[in-house]
Amino acid sequence: MNLRDIIVRKMDLQPWTEGEKIPWNEPDFSRRMLKEHLTQQHDAASRRTVRIKKHIEWIDRVILAGSPSQILDLGCGPGLYAARLAARGHSCRGIDFSPASIEYAVKHAPENCSYTFGDVRATEFGSGYDLVMFIFGELNVFKPADIRLILQKACAALKPGGKILLEIHLPEVVEQMGNQPSTWYSAESGLFSAAPHLCLMETFWDEANTIATERFFIIDAASGEVTRYAASTQAYNQAQITSMLRETGYGEIAFSHTLTGQPASEADEFFVVSASRPLETA
Ligand SMILES: C[S@@+](CC[C@H](N)C(=O)[O-])C[C@H]1O[C@@H](n2cnc3c(N)ncnc32)[C@H](O)[C@@H]1O
Image (tube, rainbow, N blue to C red; front, side):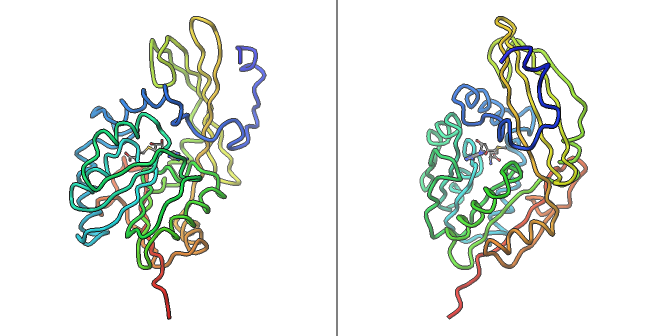
């Protein structure tokens, strides 16, 4: 793409049509993103260790009632949750399609912890889990049909009575995301490119379907070449999540403000839902 393509870009951008999400699975991007997962400067790609430890304590004590469990972590990133849960005596498997994250996770895996590099839509989940988790709002970034597929696969992978644990973007946070003013920055090197570049960002809000779409144009300073990325995030309220979970086979749906069980603070961007695969009836 070139600068002219920016000038003639679509202004009625339809969700998911120019890209589904930021390129987590591109090898170079994933190496740069790994640094963002591991930094203790912010909570953007993964939470800082101090918060993750509180989440692990709550998941272990409240969701798993402290009993040794088989856990599947979808979109596990560099394994910051799976490794800590395994260190507490659980058996964990993580799935992610970021090559650098999976490489890091495998390198730092304790016993009872394994990882699969793959897209959660296409990768076999296996079976017999007590818990399947998909946290940090990543579920909102999938198209509704993909969400249903992931929820159905997760339900089939759980033991009867096993739980799914999801962290979903607060609807008002998604709406804010879709109504941000256009902005731009310049960088010698950054997440989208290791070389000097400009990043132009704009967002679109689809009010009818409550979907925020973010579009990024990365302009290489040396060549002027333009690369475009886009990501769409759909807002769901508790009632919509409840019906999606019921339709995909779950019962005992329960909401919580945060992954620590504590009330949400102003900075919190997610709500938490757990649900169970029903026990088989004779
Ligand atoms: C916001 S990060 C959260 C990582 C991790 N759960 C954590 O909290 O530290 C989202 C993760 O989902 C992964 N992801 C996104 N879409 C995916 C897909 N279709 N298949 C597998 N992994 C995916 C990304 O590569 C990334 O590691």
